[in-house]
Image 1 (cartoon, helix red, strand yellow):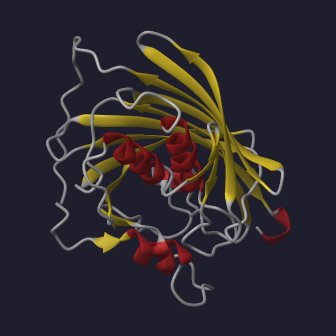
Image 2: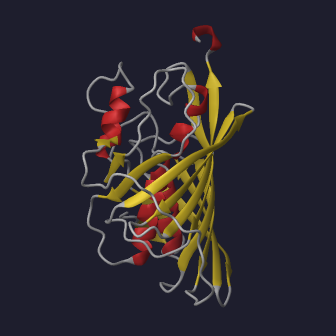
Image 3: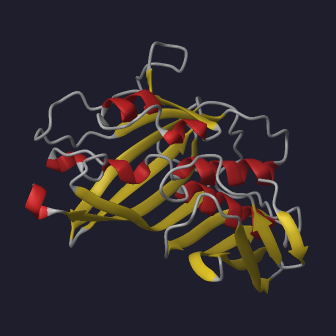
Length: 277
């Protein structure tokens, strides 16, 4: 999250901590939010973001963030942030911030009878590696500063449709202090970690299938309540629909008390190499 400030509206973000094929989408979500936060009053907090993945990023290269101030009202501020590498636009996001207000509060009761983080749960990294038999060494995603515990990983063989919500415990494993804005950026980082991976499950396939060509297309997120990303959060993820070579997934973050913290929706590209199917 250590962005270098070039001028009032331009920042440079560090390269990825992992060395995969392309930049992790959560890093772009987090860095664009962080850049926007540096251009608004510290008493305003993000309540929504709407983003597009336009080109794959290079994990070895720093990313430049250009922030445009769209509006600053009495209660709300809007920013557009564009991420570039080597002069080419990778990612674009519009974010809205609000001064905290007291208002009517309601969410559906959420009660999840699931194993807790201190129970014997498989890590998401172990699951990913078990589904990637051609992987040489540990999966690069292990280098991300987060912990993910998979509550109900798919155990059925290929070809068996899975439609139940996918449940995971998540948290950031680096100290972030008490900076609310920093924790909001960290939550954006977590939000992309697994959300689009499940759109193939209703068809009996897995995201790691080498017959697949897939990528994130867009992502929207709404922040409902203050969050401490150093504490375990339950991430409930569902597949809403697939079609037209795309899949749409939704996710909800809950704290351990069952309070809804944030809601996400993400769409991904699904293309198959039919010659090898």
